[in-house]
Image 1 (cartoon, rainbow, N blue to C red):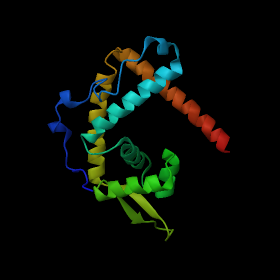
Image 2 (cartoon, one colour):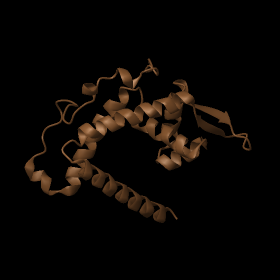
Image 3 (cartoon, rainbow, N blue to C red):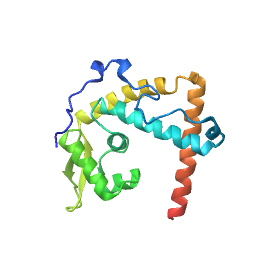
Length: 179
């Protein structure tokens, strides 16, 4: 299987190549009005659409959302062992191994021996990984502007704030259930 080129620059990606809503294929149809009365259904539908379109945008720089999650975590928290990355991102072992293999093969992250545990490796983000993260920030910002164009700048900020609050609340609930 051929791997994606890791030298893609977002500077060569015309803004018009970032997908707009409903551009992901014929399988997406307008949501029937009768289903808009269910907030959960609309949220699920919109999340599926946004997820597919966001994956297309990230593909223009050669990564997927889960790769982006790992790179972001490594930048924010520093080197981590594989198991900790899996815990933080709620990924099962085989999935985290495959994602880390991708990142290492592409030169975006590397495994280094743990200084105190001979059985473990610390995962480090590389300079190329940091560059790819900057590219992801750029295309993500452009995608958000297009995807949320129906909302004013203030509404977009409020929406983000509401989502962040819900995520924090759900994470607190999940953490409480685990302990």
